[in-house]
Amino acid sequence: MSERKLWIIKLPLSLQEEMRIYSIRHGMKIWEAIDEAVEDYFQTYQTKGVIDPNITGEQENTGKWTIQISPDKYKALKHLAIELEVSIFDVINTALYRLLAKESND
Image (tube, rainbow, N blue to C red; front, side, top):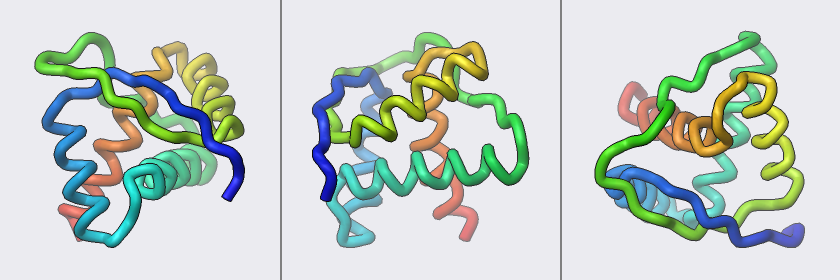
């Protein structure tokens, strides 16, 4: 495993809980589920072109959450956020929501 950095993000509390449940259900650590969400988001972006984050701006009932992420993934998220002209938090929130939505549609 490559070196991972701690990153404090602000997420809706319900999303934090859903990601914990997803991780447990799939026998993953939370960072593995986050990696899966980010990789899936990048893959969709590369194959389908621009996909606007559907989760933007301030959200209600949020809390800080410390996650582990590789420096390379963080940089890629940051570049994508700049390209889409949104906050990096909007990109990570959207990636996590998309992962959970994908599972519920399967």
